[in-house]
Amino acid sequence: MKVTLIANDTTFIYNLRREILAKLIEEGHQVTVVCQSLSHREELERIGCRLYDIPIGRRSTNPLADMKLLGKFFRILRKTKPDVVFTNNIKPNVYAGIACRVLRITYVPNITGLGTPVENPGKLRFLATCLYKCGVAGADSIFFQNEENVRFFEQHHMMPKKSRVYLLPGSGVNLQTHPALPYSPGDVVHFLFVARLLKEKGIELYLSAAKRIAQKHSNVMFHICGGCDDPKYLEAVKEAESGGYVQYHGEQNDMLPYFQMAHCVVHPSYYPEGMSNVLLEAAASARPIIATDRSGCRETVEVGKTGYLIPIKDEDALVQALEDFLQLTWEDRAKLGHAGRMKMEHEFDRQIVVQKYLDTLGTN
Image (cartoon, rainbow, N blue to C red; front, side, top):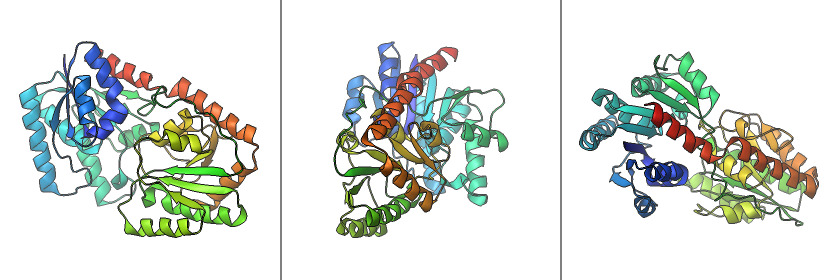
């Protein structure tokens, strides 16, 4: 069978979909990947994937550029004639979905998050929901990563009547490449923030809470890993570093040394994502987590057993959660991390996702 996977870029595909691709190829399917080529292109080709490199423009809002993208999807799909297409991310779900529908190709979108435009009522939400509705209208099956996204589709009449709906545990987490790490004792408690430095990812909350905690406790250090395009946040991080309570490590390809160093991973994000991969990887590494009580985050936490949940945009609640964590013994902190690892093994193993893709392929 000829299978095509379409997503934003090769980095996303390699980090979150390579196990699916490898299994498809192992079972004799011909696999094509359509996305923007960033990192890991060579690794995907070594697996056996044929790659079409096209710029997706994930952050672009230019209608003309989007129409050009739609045209590129049409041309590639006409040329390759796949039996089944799996789409991921917002623009591929919309525009590749439209192309598949017109060309009468079986396709399965994976709703990896609805994006910021759907958060608040208004013209942007209306436009985004209309585009999404067009994109998934001909889908045979749809993968969702959290129940709130399913409800949003239903409430806004975006769900195709004949589509089969499957709820996945996000992208899952590779339990081999993210093993349970020893929980290191020490005099200093290390907190870790992993995300792009965006307001919606909670960087402002994290920096403010870090300052308040550091004023009361001398045995804490707040670490940050993630890229930043906003000079305002780079300056804020630099100022916090000068205070001696924050260390900024930039964007990292290998997070294992940082998870090893951390005693707790803090993710005060209110970004509308499908399921937080940071939290899955942190919990798989046997690290306690402090996360926002919203879809895509709350599913990864059992309050008091694997970590803590805080209300959206609530700095005081974040400070209290950090204080509560600091009051725990080393043994109790390690128990939280161990319980998080068990949760990942039972509920979020990436092999669950791989099998669901294979099962869905067999029903189309």
